[in-house]
Image 1 (cartoon, rainbow, N blue to C red):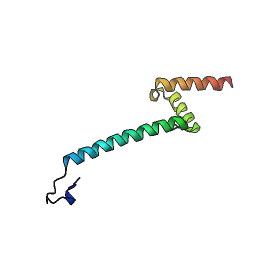
Image 2: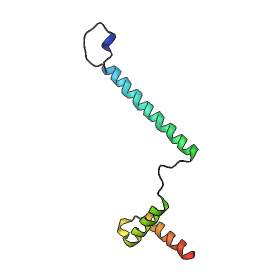
Image 3: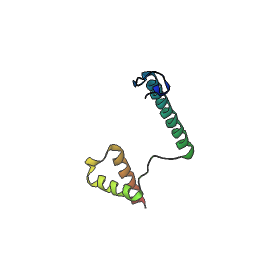
Image 4: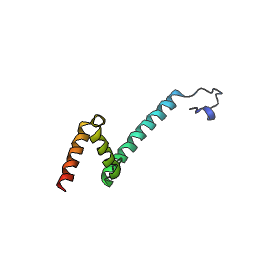
Length: 88
């Protein structure tokens, strides 16, 4: 950042203080936007992403056949799903 354009000096050296202020402003602005987005997500009950039901079913079938691809949580979900299907 060069703020010397209106200055009588003919140097082209970037101003370290102005750059530090701009960096600080950008960091604070980013934190502010992050907080605003977090509040709006909660108010609007938005989620980052949700898996489609057909993809979830396919993933559960794959994990059932190949348990090494699953995690403990995934295995619990597969077992819950199996129980639900058996009850129906």
